[in-house]
Amino acid sequence: MNTIDYVYRFDPKNPSVKPPPPDAESARRMLEDGNRMFSEWMESCRTGTFSNGEPRYVVQCNGLEVGMIRTLGELPKQAPFAVVVGCSDARVPTEMLFGQGFNDLFVIRVAGNVMGNECQGSIDFALNALSESVKVLVVLGHSGCGAVTGAVDAYLRPLKFWSKSTSNMLRSILERIFVAVREAANGIKEVWGPEARNMPGYREALIETAVCINAAQSAFQLRSEVEAAGKWEIDVLYGVFNLKNHQVSMPNDPNAPPSAENVHLAHAPSTPREFQTLATHMAELLRYRATAKAGTNGAPASPANSAAPTDHPKE
Ligand SMILES: [Zn+2]
Image (tube, rainbow, N blue to C red; front, side):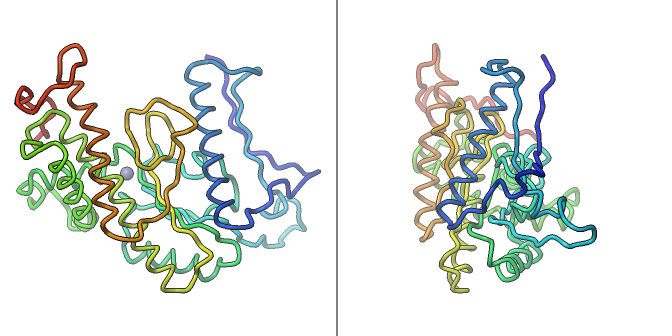
């Protein structure tokens, strides 16, 4: 493999090369386009298939706005176009995966992207102090989330959750995700049938469905708050970053091959009923994968012949 460059470019001849998006729709497109470029670049690096020279990714930055081409000591003005609430997971670098640079995103990261008081306070600050520039608010979950996995395992094995090995602080994060896990479990049971819990692929499906529902629920809550504050011009969006194909999508098929069409930030649900629809949609998506894995020669297996779970939660 050759050297790979990821470049932040500040051009002194063109210090305002990237104009801020004028509205919420343009902001959404800017994030989605950035993620498309990022995921294509990652795929080129992985496969070694790129058309011109080395795989190189250039993020244009406005040098003027971040104070690089100003009088020494002059304070640049903070002017992000998006507020992003994401998980602390080190594999999910927010600016990088959206192809953004300095002064573009106001980022709040907390394990499981849960809405605690400090997180809410940071969002309130952004919506009030930065309302001139902010166009969208994004909740970003990710596949294989450790916090959601912890909540799923606690849901499946409550005795372990209540043991002393789980700290109170960690417990408070997991408790915030339980509602999403329950909604996910109901959706899977509805689609897979009453024996869902004993079917192969159940735990993985529960994790990935709960990741989507968790992001959707936070987006729903934030949408109510944004509307209550009368900030109608700000859109609330949500999506899930897929660790395998490096794309942000909703709903997220954790095993989907990379494709430009996958990239999508959804608008926040307007009613809780949409969580149910999302859960059953995810259960449909993941049923095929689970049953195909269990069947012979790729043939789907029925619940009756898949009684022996292959990935039952570990102790
Ligand atoms: Zn996570």
